[in-house]
Image (cartoon, rainbow, N blue to C red; front, side):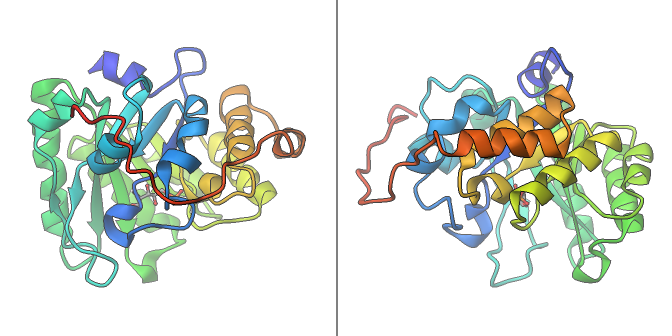
Length: 275
Ligand code: R5P
C-alpha cells in the first residue's frame, strides 16, 4: 500500500499532480482527449500520476510509463442517464495485472443511487486493503449542492469514514479549508470546468493553501492552449509553493516552446498490444 502511494505522492513534497483523463468513460471523446496518444502521451512525464481507464491505458499509454496509474474502477451510465447509477467496472485481478497504483471510484452523495455508490467504494476498499491498493473516492454532489462547502465536507468525511485512502473533491470558493480540515484522509482537488489559465492556477494555489494534498486536474490542463506548459505551471504551485503570478509567468514562458502535434487520422497503433 505504501509503495503504491509513493507512486502517486512525491517523495520530496509529499504532494501530487495527477493528470485526470478518464472523462471518456461517461461522456465519450471529451475535447482534448480525442487522441490520447497525441495529446497526452507527450506530456506524461510531468504527471506524478495518471488517472485513466483501463481501455485508454491498454490502447494509448506506453508501457514504459512507470509513474503511478490510478485506474478508473467504476462506470455504467453515460451522460445521457443518471450518472449516479454506477457499478464497479474492473476486476481487482486486472488492476493487479496492470500494476496500478490506485483505484478510483465515484461516490454520489445526495443522488438517487447514493447507497449503491457508497457500497461500490466500500467493496473496493475491502479489495484494496486485501491486495495493497489504495482507493481514491471521487466525491460527486447533486447540481443543487454544487459550490457549497457543507456538501463537500459531508461527502469527503463519509468517504474517509468508510475507508477511502484518499479523496478527490472539487474546490469551492468559500470555506474550502473546512472541507480539508474535516477529512482525516488526504484530499486532492479536481480542476473542474475549463478556466483561464491564471484563474486555474489561482484556484490551485488556494486549494494548496487550504491544506490539499495535491491536484487531480483534467480539463484545465488538457484543454489549455498549451497543456504541457500548464501542467508544469500547476506543478510549480503544488510542489514548489509558487504564487499564481509566478506560475503564470512560467506558463507564458513555456507555452511558446511547446508545439502539440495536430490531431489527424488514427494509426490504431496499440503500444500495449500484449495486455
Ligand atoms: C470525473 O468524475 C472524472 O473522474 C474526472 O477525472 C474529474 O472530473 C477531474 O477532471 P477535471 O479536472 O476535468 O474536473
